[in-house]
Structure formats: C-alpha cells, structure tokens
Length: 324
Ligand code: PEP
Ligand code: MG
Image (cartoon, rainbow, N blue to C red):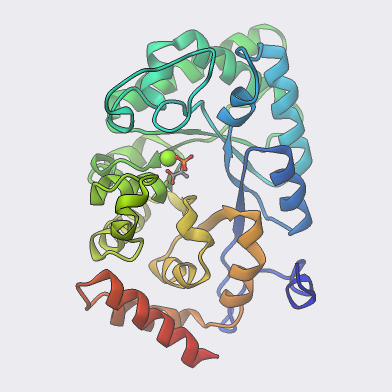
C-alpha cells in the first residue's frame, strides 16, 4: 500500500473534531489475518469460520478447530475477535455436506443449519471456548437470525458448551454473544434482540439483498443492488438507534463499511465500529481522519432528503469532493 497510507497505519481513526471510531477487519483466510495485522486493525468484527471448513474435505475435528481459532485469537490479542458460528448454505457450500435447494438464499442457511445440527454447533463453540483460555478476547456472533427463538436456542447451546468446557477443568469465561442483523425481520426486532444479547452487527451484504430482493451474486440485476438505496439507509439508521436505546453497541461488517464514501455516512449514523476487508482499512481511515463528525452528520441529513439511490450516491461524491 502507498506511502501516504502507511503513515497513518498506527494513528487512531479520529476525525479533526476528535471523534474516535474503531476500524475492525473481516477475516477468514490466513492471508486476511496477516494483512490485517499489517494494516493495524483494532479488532476483528467478523471471522468467517466457514472458510477453514470450505478448504477441507471433511468437518474439522474439535481439536483441529481449536488450533485454527487459537491462531486467530492469539494473532490479535488483546484486541477482540468476533467469531461467527458456521454460516453455510446460500452461496457457501461444503463438498462433504451438500445442500440442494431451489432457493438457497431463502433456505437452509446459517443458524438454521446449526440449530438443526446441534452436534456441529456444540463442537464448534467448545473449540472456540477452549481456544480462548487465557486470552479472553473471544466474542461469538450468530448469523442469519430471524427470530428470538433462534437466539434463545443458540444461547442455550452456548451455555451448555461452556459448562462442558468448565467440566473438563478449563478456566474459561463466558464470552460476549451477539447477533448479525442481516434479515429484514431482524431490523424490526432490534430492541427485543438487544435485550438478549451483548452486541449487534449488521451484515449489509445480505441485508441489502433481502431488503431490495436482489441476489447479491447475480450480474443481471447487479445494477439494482444499491447500498445507498433510501430503504437501506433508513434501515441502518433504525438499527443503530434501536440498539443504542437498549444500551448495546452496533457495528457493520458487510462490504459497505469498506467503501470510504459509505463509511462517512455510517460514522454519521452512529455506528460504534466499522468492520471491513483489510485492503480497505487505510483508505477508510484516511477519509474519516479528514472529515469532521459534524460535517459528516450534515452530509447525512442532506442526503436523507433524497428518494433515489443514484442521486444519493452522486450527491455524496460531490460533497466529499468539495471536502478535498
Ligand atoms: C453480510 O451478509 O454482510 C456478511 C458480512 O456476511 P457474509 O458476506 O459472509 O454473508
Ligand atoms: Mg451474511
């Protein structure tokens, strides 16, 4: 990465009017971890645990998983690492656990699969807990939540895994547990969810595809996939406000957070941290270190008056150009 960006690697993400917003990273592959450490990430907002499952030809055992997770947790300690429980189905498949469906994105995905297979979930959570002994920087996050029942079931299993690990004599503390908000139903249940969990994180890749009914991977409709669609922006703001009303932090870990222009709006909305691919981290930091929070809020409120995604994007670009 360029010299100009390298110079801000160890500086905080702080605006000229002294507003601090931590920038976290999304990881999965070993190379993501190395790149993230290199870019000075302040934490991991999303570790996609399905990645090590996808590169194997069978389910990794509990001790294999423990080693994989330990590497992540140790690499970033004492910074927090948010491990998402297995999120397969949709566009992510395992050769050794085929799922054939007509509508995979509306089918057996994420938490739905692991609640139907608690043995997979329990092995994974036990491995995470064992990997965190002595580090205490683990956070567990649940994907594709669309009902309170799923959260309660998953929490019940996490408590069971915790009790089992304690019974083996390992002194492990109970980690914070959070949910992803990536199904539109969850947007309207944020208060109820927030009362039951420690943190929330928006998965904008899925949330946008479900809000707009646009497949995130279909090139034929890709020009309808708009991060700046007014419905998306209103949903994001609602999630932040409702989570904060319940005193819980909310981050965003979809690709949107890694777009420097979008990051200005997300900061203005009040997200507690932004989590992105490591490749985008310094670009986002560079932009946010130049724009004041008050200015970002003014840009956001002006843009929210528009009802058209293209107009919002071009007005945002124009406003940022004026900033220099
Ligand atoms: C998301 O949906 O925005 C997300 C971060 O998860 P994934 O891209 O892995 O579905
Ligand atoms: Mg998702």
